[in-house]
Structures are given as structure tokens and as C-alpha cells.
Image (tube, rainbow, N blue to C red):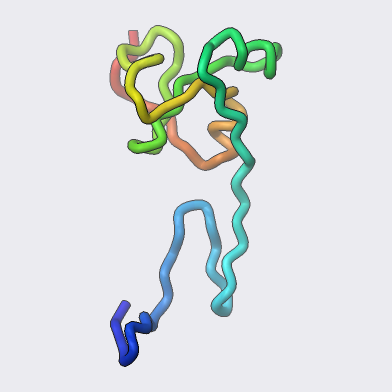
Length: 95
């Protein structure tokens, strides 16, 4: 990407979760329903697992992992919504 006159950027930019075609972006991410408490998320999706989504890092942690439910930049969500929102699972802290 290069910067041209009057503060305009030229070039193509790929966005996470988006496909840029001909200057327009199409986003294929599932909307998230974040919850403050684990029980609220479990009531929202009784057939799915609840995970802790860290928005800053872009990863989710499953129950039993070290960082599950920790931090200020996260929320409880359904695992299928986290996957559909293009977040990746954490490989660290598996027990």
C-alpha cells in the first residue's frame, strides 16, 4: 500500500474475514452474541459448548484451559458463533 496526494491510500488491502473484489468488501462473518456470565451463554446455546472469547487476541479458550474466563477484553460466547466469526481456537493451555 502506498500513500498518494491528499492523504489517500492506494493499493489493495486484505481484511480478516473479508474478501476484497474490485474495491468492495464482502464480509462472511457470523454475528456474535457476547455474554458476561457463562450461564447466560449456556442458556443461549444449550446444544453447543461455551467458550471464552478474547477480543484483543482474536482467540477463544475452551473450559479447562488456563485463560478461560480471564481478562477484561473478552466475553462468553457459543463455540459455533466464535468459529463462524472467524476467531481461532487457542492451542495453549490444554489440559
